[in-house]
Image (spheres, rainbow, N blue to C red):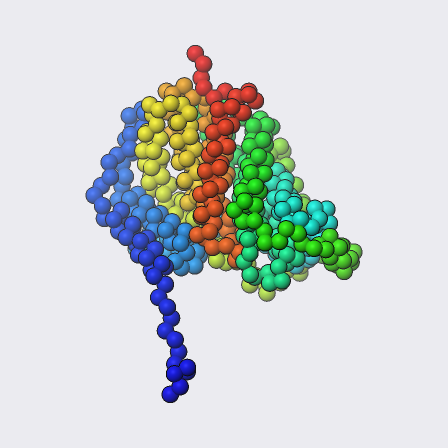
Length: 491
């Protein structure tokens, strides 16, 4: 027999096996560990960690390890989250698996469908060619143009929808940079990772960028008894959000410098391709009108109470129905939906609700924030911000806000900390989960480009998170007080 005909044995991926068993080891030592001590808040209330809550933390650690190192496809790790909850009696099967189709997951599905429509109708390429004609050939300016457009859109629409809209546009831009659009490059990594990061930075600027803003301001009103207006939030958040966008752009250029300084002839090529598209078509007009109407209704809901009662998930799913009824999309287009990403967010919702419903999240929040009960006010504020930043990388940022803000606002008066700085600091870090794909939908949407691995996203995300905390420190100590925000209580 010819030796060359003998199939080669597949090499063992020892790194993958190590991190797979590391996740299982962390689960085992937490799940079967002796009971953990109670958490006690400043008012003396005790929070006991039940066996179910301890199991939730164990699953949380297992999933986090597998997500970061991608030992199996990220969607499969999400399925494991539901299975483990049921197998170890943490939650019932009904509770564990129904979270895979919460309104938030369906909103992500609807946002991705909008991106598919923009691609199929040609609207994405039309916008991309127009932008390239404006910014020219230099790759660093092309990247900046994409980031500025991303942040600008988050002022009026949810960052999930923005990422779904920008994603096909970035694919069109990247196709003019590389002969092989599927091959990862530094420019590709920077373009897609950067889009995810700046979508988060932009989403903190108005109440329209994400659901976490109204939730945080609701807690503030209930506990403090005063409202923070739409424009007051934007006044304090806009400088920080836009500064982070430019700093992320600089960080990306430093860590992932594009292989090409210019895309020669891109302006002429873009004009040529735009001309080949011809005049705008009826399908493009229909798609644009449907999407813009949906965005307008969601945006005006913050100002018109009647429209505010309309569910955003319902609205965005109506656009999906319209696209199929008008035959802009067909059944074959459903195959283009990245179901791995949908499953990822289903799992994220499941573990988030699991931590919340079992009391594990509140136990962790009280334990963490109690460490800073007698600290300097600035250390306490930053400690709260770090907790929110860590939690929002694993669970819904709305849940991270919900479990930390009430505790922080109770502790704050003892340290003479103003509630405003607590609220705004929490919103800043909740909006920018830079390390894990499950932290925000734009992260997962960008991952679908296949330009980077989960490990690379985590590595650059750690640097971006440190940068974020440095910027937040500057705003808390210097810029927000100069703008008129109270950071400490007087008298």
